[in-house]
Image (cartoon, rainbow, N blue to C red; front, side, top):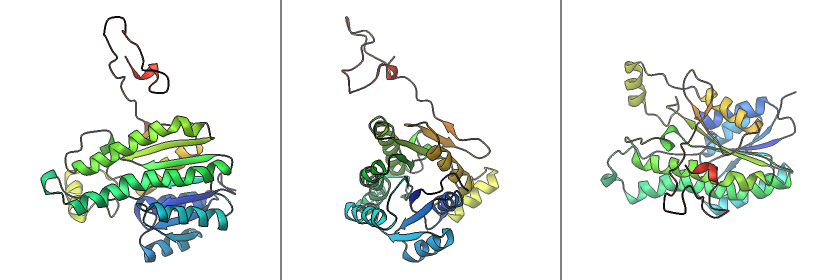
Length: 267
């Protein structure tokens, strides 16, 4: 019997890559998996692969999210786990060349998909007695990843949103974490880039390794973490530096009023 026996899990972007690997891992652990993707054929095949059910949806649509979660709770009877994974890149390093269409597409998938997703799944997971939410960010959400600045923007947004949401979700019995992979061997990385990395001897990460990290985040007790995943290393919680605090006379080291920031965040 797997560790997730009796649990219902929702995975976005599950038609391929990290999403598919994670859907398989969660199913192997006993979860009933709902595959969510825009790709009707790929999504249906993935659902059949994991013995789950497919919901076609655009994660950047709040209406689609409302429909999907309502369908899950009506059909499966509950929702315990959500992996907000769907994402895209622009493939453009010159911000002056990024079109409005490219910008809206990446923000819709990478940022709106996480916000609308979290907003939609939290009431259902809370109603089931608590559970876990994991979102795919990237090491680009922790560093200045110049090859795709807009992608970097979206992943910084995911990291910040997940960390800031974690305390209030903990009150509902829900852990909330991000996984921040390095370069993963998925269709999102083009063949030309893969060939370049191979020639340079740089190791790509297996999607299954990210799936392992997601499973650990879902079943662990930590929350508000950004777990870095690199080839050959165990998932590691990124340690954010302390922000310089005020030094104004009479306010040295003072934290903002309660509810805005904790003292541990300031130096």
